[in-house]
Length: 201
Image (cartoon, rainbow, N blue to C red):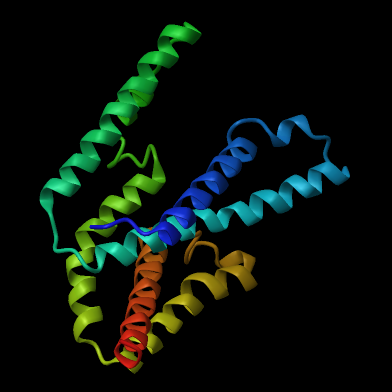
């Protein structure tokens, strides 16, 4: 498939936002800023904004998965890639830190997908398995029905947990329900694009 500059640019921006998010969330960036200072609140705003990068990345992946048939080799390659880097990171950590690693850490590193060692990849692999069913639904479902279901999913898995803090158990934005919601949104965008192209060939 020919690469398109606009999609690639969005992918690059999304990856940069994810790197920023990881720096502040996991790299100790927030720990270097005193709580309650202007810099602290600025970092919090940057972190919240960078969360968009994860959603954009899933949207882009979903947008192109809609055009593809299910491929078991794609799933296997993804799982093997995650396994390789998981074991590599564990080995580097042991060599450089000299710390003892527990059985749990070893098992999680050997089975990173099923243990959700890297939550994004776990949900992404699940999405790959759901993609054939979702593609059939998007292709055959009446357009208005698809829009209504997508809006309902957004309300349930995004709006309600955002408005009601105690409803985070419905969706934290890190589960398969939200990834499916993003897939449906990508399906709506795909249908809108097809409609525009049919009007303006």
